[in-house]
Amino acid sequence: MKISTNKQSGFTLVEIMIVVAIIGLLAAIAIPNFVKARTTAQVNACIANLKQLDGAAQQWALENKKSGTDTVSSALVTDYLKGNRVPTCPAGGNYNTAFTVSGAPTCTTGGAHTL
Image (cartoon, rainbow, N blue to C red):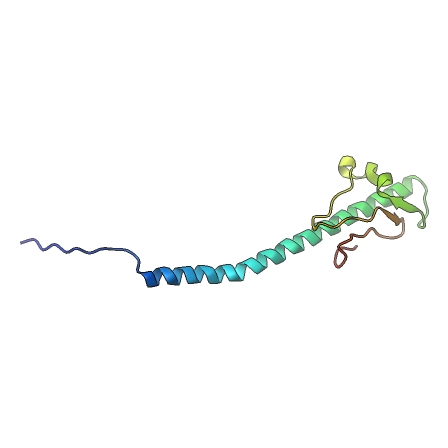
C-alpha cells in the first residue's frame, strides 16, 4: 500500500518578514557610510585639483620670472594644465580665478577644500 503525503514547501510569512527586516537593517547601516565615502572622495578630488592649479601657477611664475605678489589668473595657467582647461570641483564649487603666486588657490565650497 502506498501512502501519499501532500507536503507543500515554501517560506512562511514570518520568515519573509525576518529577511526583509534584516535587509532593511543592513541598508540603514550601509547608506550613511556610502554618503560619507562619496563626500570624502569629492573633498580629496577637489584638493587634488587645487594642488594641480597651484603647481601650474608655480610653473607659470617660474618660467615668466614673477614674484610671490604677482596675481595669477586661470587664463594664464591653462597652458600648464592637462587638457588646457581649469578642472571643475566635483563637489559643485568653483575655484577662484585670481590668486597670488605665494597664495594658494581656494574653492568656493570652503571647509576642507583648501591646500
